[in-house]
Image (cartoon, rainbow, N blue to C red; front, top):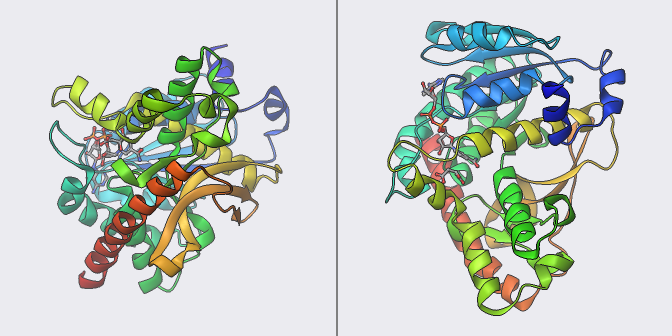
Length: 339
Ligand code: NAD
Ligand code: LMR
């Protein structure tokens, strides 16, 4: 019952329970023992579209796998210790990467770069070697820079396919729907908000004007709402007082995005959600990765949608976001080039 409810919350329908048998997929979680990795692994175990889970971490992954494996859903679960990364990646279709350090109060996501850039680079090298056709979902921060690092590693290995690389920005979308729904006293499902740009501070651009409830919030309330969506991560970091950043809501968002990708790969039509991908939308501004609505299909990225009609305020937010995004992307590319 719990599994059914949780999967329903992830956006699945009862239809998937009856049709999942022929559509099975092995998913790896790299960083599976962390604050995000553990609940994410549990939620993926509840997803009927995941037939097998490969849990890898530099510490404790076999223990996490033993624990998750007792949940009474069909998926198989295996855990791999630090020296078994290649084995963990064998035969995987999707690799989700939440490995890396989280923020403490007073830090920006960019402050994580020095540690997380090399973690992501090394994991990406292994994926490029062992599972070059896998779909890679990057959660590790700063996403605006870690995604270009993965792209560079795959390019160097001669296996980059831009349709298969995603920065997970779903938490911004989840927050936006939640905050707008609270302010408007409606259900979150009735207030879907497209969030474009990137995943840090002012690079997060919520398009409130495109939803009737979002549009109805004006003046100071509008400004406060935009700020809360852009800096929602800081709210959690501060409340956790030094013990980390968002883990549970992120696990939910990561499982939700993984499920959306699986539905697209399985041929479901009309699966559209924002995600940070290689994109031509703002290439003329030097920004070649950008989050906007993306249709997910049998080969991954099926179609990248432009931002669409936006308000004058949103134009300004976008103008502020683009140079910051450009510099974040360049930082990732430069790091990968030196490596
Ligand atoms: P955490 O410290 O609780 O867990 C990280 C895990 O990564 C640990 O278990 C650690 O052992 C593991 N790890 C470190 N190096 C590794 C390696 N080389 N290979 C495999 N595993 C390795 O941190 P967390 O709270 O789970 O956050 C993880 C990352 O996710 C952080 O960078 C955080 O900023 C980011 N994050 C992103 C979003 C988003 O919206 N994209 C949201 C929340 C957090
Ligand atoms: C978030 O948005 O919660 C994450 O990116 C973690 C963070 O550092 O804020």
